[in-house]
Image 1 (cartoon, rainbow, N blue to C red):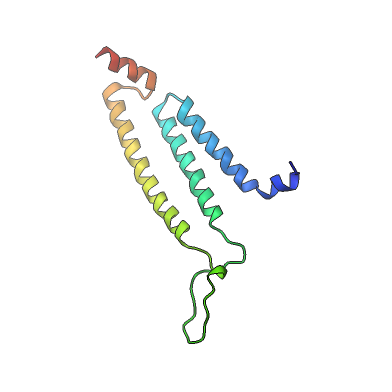
Image 2 (cartoon, rainbow, N blue to C red):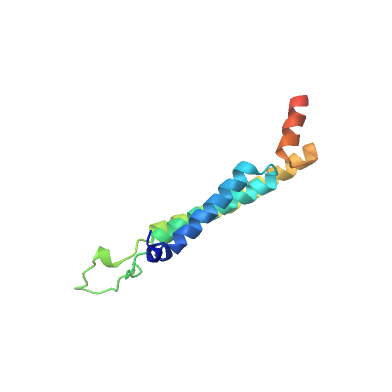
Length: 126
């Protein structure tokens, strides 16, 4: 591969690395809090990716001046929908994080640990 092409897409490589870190934490860690952190990292990488692909070079914000005779050319404007959807995803992610941490607290109060293997062993004993 050409090094200039790799460097031109450096932000995408960063997102892939963040995705892999989050996925690694979700799959390999036994601690529930570490899994939650992995989920947040994974989600952040996806949000950053969607924001990046929504950017249009040379595009303007979709606000047009009032007046007669102004012709709107859609190709000159950026689509604000992906950015708005990612704002919604951030809000949903914060709510999900809060619920996940609350459940982790309940699990810790019930079992005295956040290690997945120990919790599974206690559940099998019951």
